[in-house]
Image (cartoon, rainbow, N blue to C red; front, side):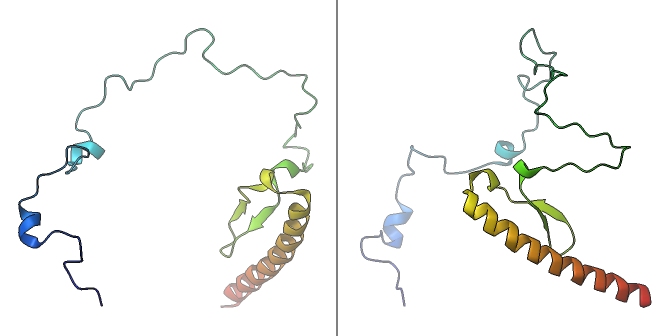
Length: 132
């Protein structure tokens, strides 16, 4: 059980007479987080020469192209496997590029197994909802 005041801490009377430190802000007003007026320096402007992103080159063979009308699929291995979440939403592993080859191999195997289990569970739940 901790009793107050602790050793070395000021007593209530001493604390009431202490001067605030000038090294930090002691109060935060709502304007700090929600200013009433827009910052005039924070405005959109037209990019000047050299400030925009360069246009993609049309002949880059390393960039996969996909015709959405063809029905073809495209592998996005650099992004890592797709994870099926419990609610059926999809996500990816944020630190995939930082994993070693062995970690990626193990992760892919585990995610494939877990995705199958989750998809089976979601499909079964959908069938039960149709019956009801």
